[in-house]
Length: 471
Ligand code: 6PG
Image (cartoon, rainbow, N blue to C red; front, side, top):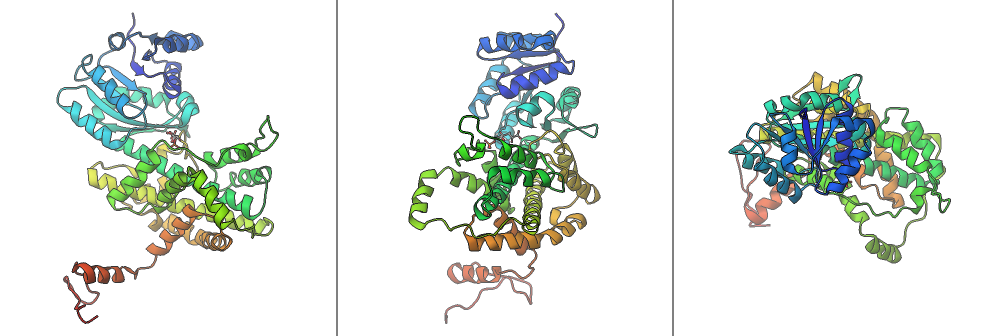
């Protein structure tokens, strides 16, 4: 029988759609799922694409069905399940075969797995895939990390299945080791901030201006035609316009205000902290997600403290312009923070991450896709060594024009008691970085006072101690 070009383990939603995408692009794919009935059902429902699918009832059959060197995509839940699959495949594969973990893995696990396999095992690729079900089926954004020669073996497949932006495939090899999964993690951190800031603006329109969901939907739809144009703004408008068929109420009004999280957003905040890079807009979004889960506690707090009455007047054109500008400014800061975290990780782990390419492969296919990412790609192309997007000529002009709107919104919300943690964090970041004389002089003095940690002086070189004994 004709050998398959590639294999895939795990026919869950993402795995099944990715396999169909691969088959549709003319590649022969061998598939295996732990529950055999799912493999059967998958092939039966694949229609004409079944011609390109080889259903395997064991890992051994899967390994035997693929052309050497054998690339096998593992699309199972992140964590132990990936280790179990690697262990099972290890005995069946040879050193030049390639295991590709396409789940949302923690890049530290990817590094560990790569190191464990380096001596005797097959090669290992950590591949971030974004775009959800629809993306997996018709074109995701794909972020690859691992040995470049191993990537070359699967490049034609990735090139064919990835989303396209103006004809350019949204897939790339980004660096060795855990680079691909790290970039996917930061993608998700930015996704959290993007979603949270949109939700904060929705909160202002709902609780401050008293608008209904159907009244807010066209506002986002209109913004989607401008500089905020993005998948997340587009789906926000669609979601807000949707009515629950059972109750006849707006769909969002019948959905509990408690959001789940699988971990990647939290990892991005943890990694930012480990690297010592502020990603406060992202961190605030992760914290807001966690706070959303404490529904009972929030109910008790509302009973105790009350909720301020709506304070804003009607949502005039001017008010909407300010809100749009605030969201844009917040977004700039969140993306700048995410890219700074990637720049720092690139230095720390020696990845040489091509940040312009990262922005380019996020322009289509992924959840945070937007026209804005094209502008980020241009900024990195002009200044590849950029550590802080806010200091590039293009983005410094943009934030300079937009931050007064962010300031106005955050100030009004503080007075009105409307929570905007991620927008406020973005403003705090901007205000902190543009003040060259900060307040850490006092922190240094305090550290020296209680712990003799020493401090530097503004007027001469060296490390000094204060004589605090007489204070
Ligand atoms: C993507 C998404 C996806 C993620 C979901 C849920 O890029 O396609 O980021 O990978 O799993 O968005 O993530 P949370 O459960 O953490 O919200």
